[in-house]
Structures are given as C-alpha cells and as structure tokens.
Image (cartoon, rainbow over all chains, first blue to last red; front, side):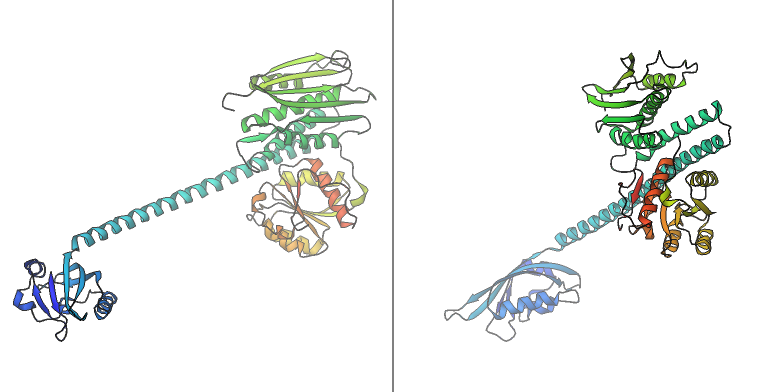
Length: 335
Length: 147
C-alpha cells in the first residue's frame, strides 16, 4: 500500500507499508518523495498508463493491472486500485493505492493459452488428416464405381458383338439372352450410388427403367408389360438378385406365354408387407403346361436359385388363363 | 430385341468419342442398325477435336474418360463450339461433368441399354429438326440444365 500527496508537485509518494517494500525490493527512503512512474519500464502498456493519468486528473478511483519493475530489474504484474481522498473543500488531497502481485496469475494464464493453442493446432492437424483420408477414399469409391459401370458396358458390348457375328439360331439367341441379363444387372447397378443413400436400392425406380427397356422391344399391338410396383427401398446387396429375378420371369412370360399371334399382357406387382415384400408376375397367356417344352429351363432354375439366395419362397400357379408366379422375400431384422 | 430406326434422324452423321474399343465397335453397329452414319471413332482428345473439325458431325457421343485422361469435358467444349454439332456425353463418370455441361446437350449414363441410345438419338433428332419433341426425355438420359 502507498499514499501520494496530490497537493505537492508531481504527486510524490509520502507513505509506503512494508509489504510494498517487500514487493518492489526498494528501501523506504528510496521511494519517499518520488512519483510512482519510476516503477514502469519497457514492458509497461502505455495505454494503461494513460488510463491511470486520466483517472487521477479526473479524481476518480481506478482498478488496473500494470507491468512494473522491481529494484533488481525483474518485472511483475501489479494489480492496483487507486482511490482519491478529497479535502474538506472537495479538492484532491491524497491518492491511496493498494497493490497485489499478479505475476503468478499471468504466468498461469499464459501457460493455459499456450496449451490451448497447442491443442487447437493438434485438433486442426488431425482434422486436416482425416479430411484428406476421406477425400482419398471418396475418390477411390468413385473410381471403383466408374470401373464397374464401364466394365458392365464392355461385357454387354462383347456379348452383343458376338451375337451379331453368330448365325441366327439357338447360339445367337443364347448370346442375346445373356446380353439382356447383363442389361438388367446394369440397370440395377446404374441406380446404385447415383444419388442419395448408397446403401439402398429403389425397386420401383428400377422397374420403371426396366419396363421402358423391355417394352421398346415389343410390338405394342400384341404384347404389353405393365407394372404396379411400390417405391420399396431394399438393401443394395439385394439389387442384383432382384433385378435378375424380375428380368427372368418377365422375359420368360413374354417369350413363352404368347405363341403364334396370341395377344396378351404381363403384369408385375410388388408390395411391401409386414415381414418383407410380396412380388407377383402374372400373364394371361397359354400357361406353362400348354407352352412348348423347355428342356433347358434355365430361366426357371435361375429364378429358383435367386429366390433361395434371398431366403424367399416361390409358388407357380396355373391360372385361367396364364401363369402367375408369387414370391415372398423376407427382409432381415436389420433391414 | 430389335430396335427400329425412326425416320426423323435417319442419316444423321455421328462422331463416336470412346476409348474402349469394344464399346465403340458395338456402338457403331447399333448406330448402323438405327440408320445413322458413324463419321469416325476417336479415342484421345486431340483425335476427337481434329475429327470434329474435319467432319463437322451432327451429333458427337463423348465419353469423359479417354486414353489421355478425363479429357472428354474439353472435347465437349471444343466440339459444341461448332453450332452444327450436338454433343451428348456417354459416361459412367457423370460426377465429372461441370455445371454448364461444357456446352453438351445432355448425358447418357453408363451402363446404358441400346434402347436408351436409340430413344436419345431420336429425341436429339427431333430437337435438331426444330420440332418440339412430343415425348419426355427418355429414361436413362439426363438433359443439361440449360436446355
């Protein structure tokens, strides 16, 4: 603590306590009669000094923290409150100042800020590393996706080129049939990763595209394929088997149900129900028994294999007229 | 499956820009079936731009990934500078198409079916002949936002 005399020139110190002597390292006789400014030094904030001068000139109390210097030249943070004491006429008579050493507090603050900066830097570096890794993985996914799609196009081109060079007959039909199966898989694959949720495949969207493809190759006066398929989101893993199954049953019906000039339609229906999905593919054609014997029966085998893979059940009904295939595909508990 | 040529665009001259030989060859056969004329097959950007200048095709079918890298975008920009040429991307890499489509009319997503190629070219022929096409844009074909 110290007191200065406001009535004498340059506001000199007229009293100090022992604590102030301990704080600054000066002897009492070295302080009495001097202005406090001699405690300031190179690290003292001139703005803060101006603020103190302003308060003293206005005769107002002020609290501040200032860097001061001890007798041995070491700096310390001096937190002080300066209070004016007025005489009977209201003029400033003395200024009373109480000090506390804030050096330790400032050291802690500085250390804390250093730690914070280091942490923020580390977080920043890690975020950048994760970002880079994510970008790399995304680029890789796009590359793989592009390659798969391109390869499907190559496979399909290969089949069709060979079909073109094969004389009309069973071999050519087999090649064209394979190209169409690959086409159905391609349609399913084109819809994967193209937008939104990459883990889901929309059966309704697939059927719309598939229908356009199949009807483009049919005489609309004779055969039509229609679909009434809900927008059912299934897991991406089910996309290829479902696409193959729908393609196989539909083309089978188109190929075998309407011999000669028989006119007819094939309808595809799919509904979500409690435990999974119910699919029905029906035609108003001649029926399996009446159709020509199909020794290979590859289409039917393929469908039964795929249904088994999807843990579903399949039933073939002879209708009047035509054939109706009913399939139930369960969705797993996690679906 | 047979796809019938539609008279509107019959004889339309088409440049194929595709680095995958099998895809290009099958596409050529298909264009022939549909009654179009393939004026050339290019597999690099330089080849494509040179063929564009020498043949001034009606339509250019442009893959984005070519022998010299993802240069199909530049090719589209160069070819569509000629007002006589309609550029259509054919790619499995649609994410690389810039927002302005580099002057292209639209994109056929790979893997495509022959039906999509046929109906897209029919649609393009309709637009080029000035009549507003009656049908919607075909499934599997995406029109550039500026059109």
